[in-house]
Image (cartoon, rainbow, N blue to C red):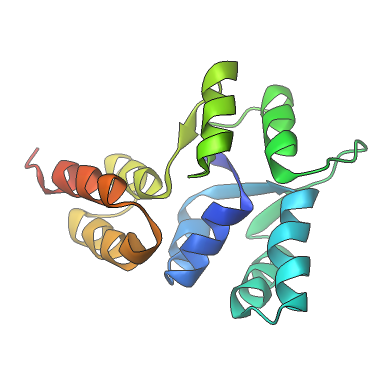
Length: 156
């Protein structure tokens, strides 16, 4: 599975301690401007998650997509790149970006839905998915959490 990911989603997975599992199970791609937002700006502020993300970029577990076009922000880059590449979806929980993606017909996954997708694709089991969801809980909305929790707890 190939996902484009915005800075907010990447940072939330990192803060929740889930980035390693995510990058081991999914091919994550970020535009150069998202790298600048999540790593470069984060390092200047002394954010630990920025150093962890940078480590995964250097290890090629997160791939930076370089294009000749210079983007003002990650939202613009994500929508443009999705049109030019074959990705499953854009991983984001940014409301403004989600509206733009919906209008353009670009599929997107909320962070908790990424965990659900891993479970549905049998890349993680139910218990691991529920543990990951609990770790992510402080960083996502109550609606997102409770909806995915109900689906994960439903016996198949």
